[in-house]
Image (tube, rainbow, N blue to C red):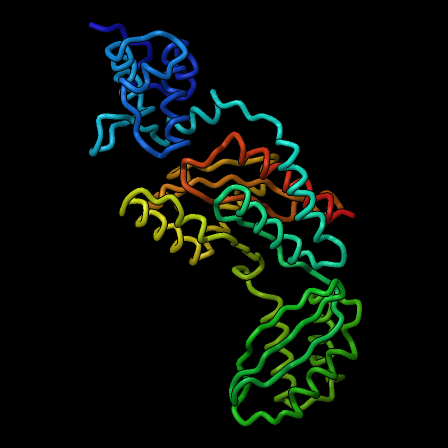
Length: 361
């Protein structure tokens, strides 16, 4: 009977005690999976291992790795794939994260820093997520706090009898549009009057400043406005300020990358499930918010977060900072669990640092 190299029912801490042979076999299984997405069998492993082992000896070790919860056999194959616990152990204990290649650094600098001059914060972040998406063949994600920008101009434009578009322009050039309900039969002159009233008071103020000033003026009867105009102003300011659920902005770029390299219907279902999760946004925002409270890169693998338990996706994100050194958002990628972690982790980290530098300059 083969002696067991691994304590059965191992915790990640005891897994660190894997002997060299078990580690090497496990590493090859994971690296093969990250490269091909396919299960690997004992015969192939015995050929590619740097140590000389028969397929039977490899099978014994694989059996131990399976009992330890690090690998499993998919129903279609005699080969083995890493479990989520296995991937987590690999990332935490075995993987070597190297420095970012010089050409990747240059690509990030050129694309992200090249957008910095005169561009709004949102444009810089969108470009950064697009660039990460392209370099990693995953979906790029950014979670950012709504910018409390100083205001330059407000305008109300009627769309339909009971809907108007409110356009808010910040001093940094950022433009935000919101569709508002308006009372039926509202004269266009009320929309013009509302815009004029706000524009006369907003220059250089933040939305919060403007809102409290207007509310005070209305309460004290200093705002000589008819009731319909007052209602538009109140609706516009409430909509822009946003509620709890609206104070974060989620930018996702490169969904199409997730449709590449699908192996089976299972993969397609997994990606559909991920798209559904990204559409709901709230869950993604909560997940990324957890990463905001940590220093450095955070990695969530599969069901380590409830949001992606069905789609079996991984998320690699890092926080970025504003000019005062405060963490104001996170940037990273969402993709299949077989992301190239060793390459993507330093890439996400470096992008977050480039974005921080741009926002603080």
